[in-house]
Length: 188
Image (cartoon, rainbow, N blue to C red):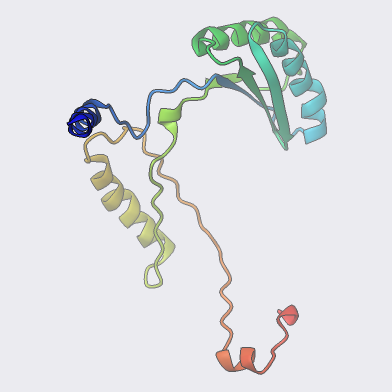
């Protein structure tokens, strides 16, 4: 009798349990990006990224700060303590950057601040390739036929990223007989 009651209680609870593929989780991370066209990574690190790191690391509830610099781009990741309101954290970071903006090099573009949002992670990435179509025809089909059909699906975000990237690849076909004969792969 007790077992039957536990099974019924378990099934009832299971039916009422909310399940979500992407639950609303607010990850306390913000990104600051700065574009400095033509500047080498070392210059960006010293004159842009380091001052931003120093300014934002002193904000309240900042756990740690990470950064990287590439040719023409510097980025700073700010990790806040769990439970911190990311909107408040983003505002504080914006205030800190505004305070040091005049000390940054004159050639930089306006720094942008983005908070991490789980709902912005793409669920699907679609790519197309063809042996029979040239690049222009394939792009035309993907952009004008496939993408609009995907946009019509319910609950698909309006911001579909349509990018045309030409991926070059080299295919090497090796005969089985060559493998069995001991063909040295280091000569490839």
